[in-house]
Amino acid sequence: MTDNGYKAGSNLEKVLSAGTFAVTSECGPPKSADGGVIERKAKILKGFVDAVNITDNQTAVVRVCSLASGVTAQQNGVEAIMQMTCRDRNRLAMQADILGAATLGIKNILCLTGDHLSFGNHPEAKGVHDLDSLNLIRMYKDMRDEKTFQCGEEMDVAPPLYIGCAENPFGDPFEFRALRLKKKIEAGADFMQTQCIFNIPKFKEWMKEVRALGLHQEIKILAGITPLKGAGGARYMKNFVPGMDVPQEIVDRMAGVEKGPPSHAEGKKLAVEMIKELAEIEGVAGIHIMAVEWEEAVPEIVETAGLLPRPAVA
Amino acid sequence: MITAERKPFDEILTLVDGHKKVLVAGCDTCVAICLTGGEKEAEILASELRMKAQADGREVEVEHTAAIRQCEWEYLDMIAAKVEEADVVLSMACGIGIQSMAEKFEPKLVVPAVNTNMLGMPQEHAVWLERCGACGDCVIGETAGICPVVRCSKSLMNGPCGGSHDGKCEVTTPEKEEIDCAWALIWERLKAQGREELMEVTRPPKNWSKSSSGGPRKMVKEEAKPV
Ligand code: SF4
Ligand code: SF4
Image 1 (tube, chains in turn green, blue):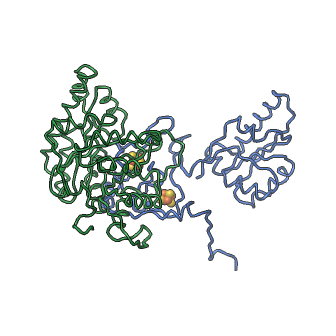
Image 2 (cartoon, chains in turn purple, brown):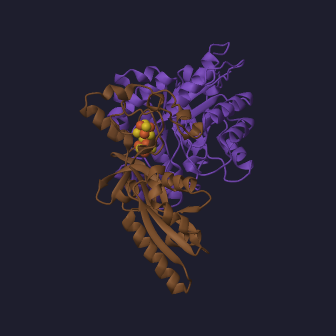
Image 3 (cartoon, helix red, strand yellow):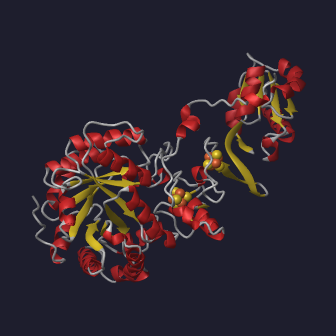
């Protein structure tokens, strides 16, 4: 706990603690030592989001690490949410990296299991999975609150962390999904971002379960959306992305407009409609816009959804 | 049981390349049951090697034999005479059997003809599935008798990841066949047992030092030692 009563005192924590509807987005670091990419993406998003997720070798493809990219984003005016998967690091590396991140001013962390190596560009690598994401959350919470390493040894200076997790409301077994969130809250998660939502009725059903367990009062829930560029992307996600639930109506709606600028406009329009509908759901504390390699779309979506200006928190 | 698959023929040829007297040694326990390395398979491989040598115009003597269990030294005496005569032993046993041969007959060259792949069981005729990773700290008392260490693609200990879909894992086999999600199976069986509250239990980080991460393991049974 920091002096001012916050766990980490990050911008995101302050926005969510104030009860303001939060906006986060996502940046994927590049597949080369090009520091300019994150700098450029951060400049696009600056002022339009409260914090941005920096992915960690997303889809098991090697990229600039989330720590370095997170620092770059922060140097360019956007607070980072550093993603950390259990796939590539054991408990030593996960603790070392978070200490390093904290010394460089990163305060938000998102704890993930990680997509399986077979999806990525090094399918022959050894998957680590020393801890699962639940134990990763617990480990970071203990580092922050108890000043202890996972082994129980103490440290002098604890990393101030605002700890996030992800949840897929569309994963199976559906009956277990809300319970899984409960386990993550018990482990120490402060905020949660969902997998991309396209099936809003199903998400509402899940939120009902979440509220029945009172979980929305114990964790800040950010609903995840992905603006679609066209019908192709919608079909791809429907058929090939694990754990994704894209209703046929959405594919049809995107297929109904011409590919290119018209379908881009339709995708943004759909995103805004979805944000408005999601924001009405009790227990949704913010929106997480995952515009994969389409960061340019985010400012317009945020603005049209009426979410500007972003609060300036001290 | 331990399962193994025969190596590609070309790789086997490379391993015995240049040797004049080859002994193909089968093992009549696990690898025989999984139809890979028993006496029958040893005989087949030996004749394939002979035919190949003949076709290539090389003079190579190939014999075959089998031990009841290559992984126990007592059983190796029975095949010792044949091993002595060979320049190279091509063992069709699991990795354990191959090593016990190499140790027993040192400095005889013993090479593997198979890739040992798992601790599994036959699911149906000619199909085997992995069941255990010998992690040294069995948890399946809490997971409905289903191993999360090897049957979950990410060795998760606290329920399914976000990729579990309709009972299937987000991962497919290299042949793109679907795999059952271990945690979907665990959930269903725990429900059938009326023990689904076990899904809400948070298991602490696993102690991998009891697995091969802790270095080669040794088991000693004091009570069974001769006095
Ligand atoms: S938990 Fe460990 S010992 Fe038990 S079946 Fe799985 S790998 Fe084997
Ligand atoms: S889908 Fe199921 S088996 Fe596959 S990694 Fe996730 S939890 Fe494990």
